[in-house]
Amino acid sequence: MLETATKDKDSGIIQINEALETRNGEASLFFFDDLIQVVKEVEGWMYEDKGDNIGKPSKKDDDMVENLYRLMLLNTQWYDMEEEDEDYEDELIRNKVTGY
Image (cartoon, rainbow, N blue to C red; front, side, top):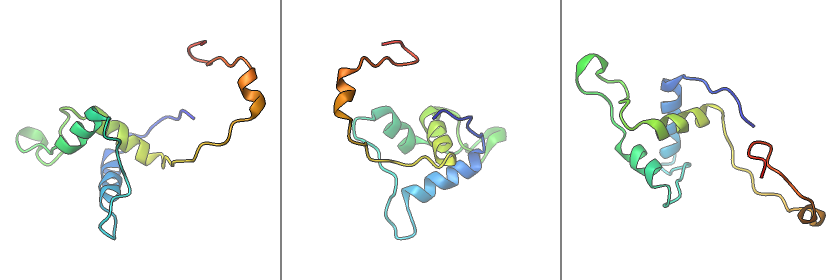
């Protein structure tokens, strides 16, 4: 379901850090290997070390991290797929957005 995301970046960053290393020292957040841009941006994300924004998260190459912290703030959870109904395949289903 599409919801309006908050821009509470500080809380989102805290949640990302907690998910990447939990109390028992293990990660609870994982990325698929083929998400190359996501992995690159998460691994390379830095804090500013000069100018007026010292100590604040860098805005360079932060699109995936921004998406991630907003997902974290929405408490997004994984759910296993449900079994499809056998009659489902016989119906013509169209996507409400694309029409296909």
